[in-house]
Amino acid sequence: MGEKDITEKLLEEHNDVFSDIVNVLLFQGKKVVKEESLSNTTNISQYKIENKIHEQERDVSKIWKKSDRKREVMDGEKENKVSEYQRLDEEDVVIAMYGLENQTEIDKEMPFRVIGYDGAKYRSQVNRKEKSRHFPVVTMVLYFGERRWDKNKSLYEGMIVPEYLEPYVNDYKINVYEIAYLTEEQVNMFTSDFKMVADYFVQMRKNKNYQPSKETIKHVDEVLKLMSVLTKDDRFLKVQQGKKGEVKNMCEVLDRVENRGIAKGIELGISQGIRSTIEIAKEYGATREGLIEKIKEKYSLSDAEAKENVDKYYS
Image (cartoon, rainbow, N blue to C red):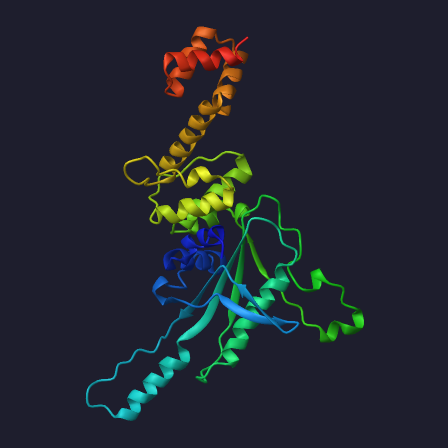
């Protein structure tokens, strides 16, 4: 598995984030799935094509375990009652398996991929040695693109099914959640670090601009790595390099991302931010001397650096 694939899964592997995503997107913010009720499960399954074994791997998946029956067996009670409680716990413990799939691009083959993931998990339940009851599998596709998901969301949409076969061909629908199109109310339902991620994509889609939150980030490294993958901007990975102390919120993240962009631009000759500042100031009649002072103050440049940048774009 590539480094990019590992990186984008790290944040969602945390139970507080995983349960938060499930609760908001499936249960409208109700705390149905508790983080302590989640446990890891294998993401890899195999399938056979032309006598060759192939592997398929989910992004993130977890088993949801819950039992409302408490073992309230007191000392001295009959052993058969203990056995009964144990049996009930074992049968009722697995409620469902949730799987998350991250997409930055629209994939028309997604229904066919998801049915493969889900089918493999159902098949593994049939093959279990212990004969406890089966449990449902729920796959959620988290799509981070700005363009609406206008491709297949079911098997029927991805193939031609003759009318005379329709009674015999089962459809299979997938659950696609367009993160950039969540409502403000939905974003505010998140209580984990995923709130900052969702808020970023919603704001960028609506305003082409991002006003960061001062809410504290719990899993800083994982958030930065996921943002780097999803935005294709490696400056998020470099935010903490050369700095003392960890960033605490998205305000600090954005400050460091912007500063890195400016530094890179100066090293190449001129940053886009400085160029934009000069062009706008010129439209409002700023003098050359005034521009030098503005650029020096805004971008923390020396007199010589500010003068050099203004000279390149002032005529």
